[in-house]
Image (cartoon, rainbow, N blue to C red; front, side, top):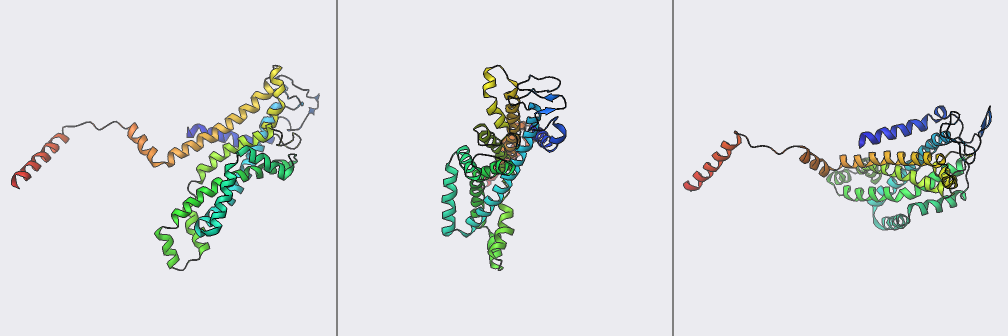
Length: 311
């Protein structure tokens, strides 16, 4: 699972990085030297995956869409980790009224459905319309708000547990300040589970971004390529037998989410000592009795009986 997930994720990342070199056309390009592409053209030598109802090249839109997805994932995860970890460490270490307020606020945000909260934040930030900053970046900020409570809850719980450890008490006795204890001693030990949460949130970010685009709160085709938007525009094509405008963006979403999920689940298995012990127990055959162990067992029994007789 881990190897398969890493391969899929590597292909996704490399495709997004080298999108300008891999894509035959621009994400908003409608014509070339031979004229307009034409709408809903089937796959051919000129357009390997056909064209959309708007006249865009499907292959180019899929490749450029990976770049948009990667940008949104990186921005959303980095901002949410920064805010969630900072609030979690401060809340868990200081406690008191600040901790109660932050817990209530984050629980209230966490209670909202992910997609609904992202839609509300997208409307608040950019009114549902988009340019490169107001569209891609607004989508990233919308997803950031969704993920902050998750990092907050995890880091706060770890901080509450770690601040009772002996090394934290020793740092207090030595006169270390609260800031030094929080960000030098506690933070280093409270962030061990972040890689696992990062991979799982990355797959959720792709789905949320696609959901925003599908519902019309995403990114316009002239600003950036986005898989959910392309799926939305291909709904009417499916009933007409035009399959290529929806299959390839949908397949890109499925593969990207599958790769992230496989990596996250595999890291979860590797990080859980109970699963490692169970896997070793299942994979190794039970020890077979040998001629060397039988005499030892009988000798132990005889020795025990002799001891009882002497007593």
